[in-house]
Image (cartoon, rainbow, N blue to C red; front, side):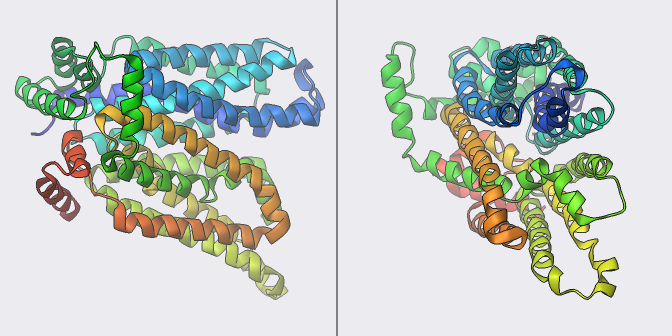
Length: 480
């Protein structure tokens, strides 16, 4: 049944508000790129050594790892909405510590907490958005994750070219503050409420998001059926240790393991697809290209391009099957990496009179790279995280994927200097290209089509319940 058009705006507002935390994450992600030069020079009254600035840059990645675990636990324990409210408060606190304190250890704590609560919100946001959005618009609301992250990244780069880094952080405090205020007026995830035996409240919340009583009754019935099948043994009088034991046993259940492995492969495709290299070393890469533009403003242009592409292509994702878009976007990512690697390998042998034209190949490849990311390589990965995990393992599995995804990110960034030194730019991008092709091939055989399907139908597909009917719905969606 189609979503009530009069309530689509509420669902989109809820998704956009939850993803404001990801806008803050985008700001935090790019902060060190322009803050470190200022800190090394002692501008604005605070000076750090190279060792201290290295900690300033890297400790955020450690925060995202613990934050993913935090988000997975609290999103299930206290609810998606309350978990996001906690993340907003934590982000405000972290930014206050960084921008209003001059003592290095405290600034470092603030930097760590910014990563921690950003990582936590990443887990809670994907579940909240998928569980409050109707299947008809989940293609759009799922892309807001990447759109708002990219917007924050671009905004940070732009403000960093104009203001001191502490001023940028103080401006950024307004974003989680606004998110906190709006989330207070939103309703909790109906799926979470049903699983915690709060059916009456779930009806009210789903009515808030859907409006149509017929749609609400039908969807509540599906959620209850799915919840009863997945959590039939999880009742209030069961000891906590027994719940943990059952969670651990579910880790080997193919209904959980298959989507979990797929999502991890897709996260590897992002973190080992060359994107961290561009994000952390953008200015260095652009300077080495020797193009006739200021590398700092070119970095802003490239970041803005990614954000605009994500916004424009989000409307395409509403109408287009997820699987098709993901495979297409992955093809563009692989082509861009292949061009980067190929240019690095043959560059020493290119005649001087051709260099005037060929020197633009890496820059064009960067734009194609980000085009692939915006087309679905990034958005669909995070969208599926809130869709294909079983309802009773969505929080736990989302937390694990968040932790592992940030470990992949840490390893990709940490090994980049060693790769550049040992195998050079050509070898490094060849590795990234190979990883992308491996992920793309695996997803070609393993990735389901979820466009227009309810979360309950997707869960039936992986749990082998009504699998024939679910597979037919996936084929119908892919044929649209």
